Amino acid sequence: MIEELDVRPFLGAAKLLHDGALVAERYAAFGEFIETAPGIVCVSRAGTAPLVLGSTKSRWLYRPIGLSDRRPVDCPRGTVLPQVKAGGPASARSMTSAVHRTATHGCCAVAVSRIQLEGLTRRFGAVTAVDDVWLDVADREFLVLLGPSGCGKSTLLRMIAGLLPPSQGRVLLGGTDITHVPPQRRDLAMVFQSYALYPHLSVARNIGFPLRARKWSRTDIKAKVAAVAATLELTELLDRRPKELSGGQRQRVALGRALVRDPGAFLMDEPLSNLDAKLRATTRSEISELHSRLGATVVYVTHDQVEAMTMATRIALLDGGRLEQLGTPSEVYDEPASVFVARFLGSPAMNIVEATVRSACGTLAAHGPELEVPLGIDADVPERPVLLGVRPEHLTLTTADRGDLHAVVTAVENLGSEEVAHCLAGQSRVSVRGPRPLGVAVGDRVHLAAQPRYLHLFAPGSGRRLAWRPASVTAPA
Picture 1 (cartoon, rainbow, N blue to C red):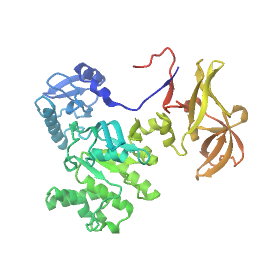
Picture 2: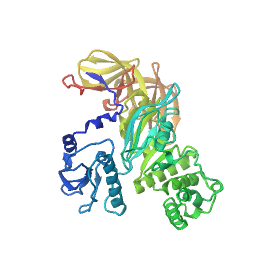
Picture 3: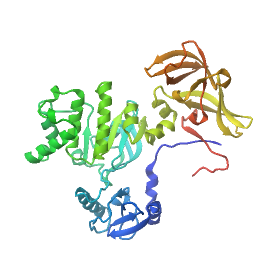
Picture 4: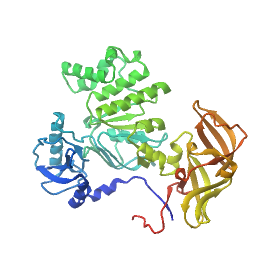
């Protein structure tokens, strides 16, 4: 049977893991559980370093607040872990602080920058800008909030930063509820689209400004600014003012001002949108390299799919304030959850054609004007309308007798190493992308084919992805 899938992420399932047995079962694959100190448990696995989890005495817990809901992290063998009394959220916070102090001295690394959004909503009068968003940003993750203008991504980032209060829901940092904590008390650093540099201050004083606000000594500020400048290759520019810098250099100064604070996480609101294409590509690579070196948690807002695909460890794609899909760049590109996702990612966008799925000689195929595409599924099901999707790079030119889709070329674009042919198949517009030259011209009638594994089906009404499940398989509740 063909089943409509709603794969928009909902993290409420984590709330079901309060029972200790379930938590133990979840991590059983790592090996034997060993309690090394009150409140701290190590999980050892043959040939690997142990992993640190939280516990209360000898009972396994999973809490929405505190250390016990943290993901496991690597910890060298033989580490002397701090003794922390077991208890509720307060002791969990003291455990976090104690283990973090241990990590600072090189004994072990602990996830301290996890960001959780629980049902976050923001309304402006009758308009809902962000609608019930659930996200779990892991420590050291580079999460990109992607979507068109007005989808709510910047509003969501500002709620994380504390610049906007949510109408509903919670924001947690490292397991601690910071929903109503003022921005200056959150362990977060924000990089704005406009850089927001002080024009009368030098690069060094711009970078060191957060430390002066915290009453650091001049000696410590100078040492810290020098270290950050060396990381961002700004050492030769420390005496210049912003007006004497290029756009890319200004962006690195803005990053340095955020980096100098050693924040728990970085929030970046379209930081590359003011740069030209060449400089944007260079700075994009620099930010990715910086993230790899520092291992920092980053939440990054952009409308540019290239930035999202090349920089993100995961992409959260928003539309109309709602989370459409969450996954790795490969997952959201190869298995789009909806027509919106399919069309938003990719250049040119995925081809979407109206069709009807019906059985012919025991095999399913999609039929339509100038269209007959085998789906590679042996079955006999009732006829139903669908939207058929295939990416331009997955269409190939072939002969008339082997073609699944027949069209007329209306335009050809030269992209240097590639060409894109825009075609008309019946009333549907279809694009084909391939190495130059494609060997077609405007007015040519072409025959196109695609392998079944590259085909996508969507429901015409909701636009959600359709998946094939054998009738004998029962879908999970």
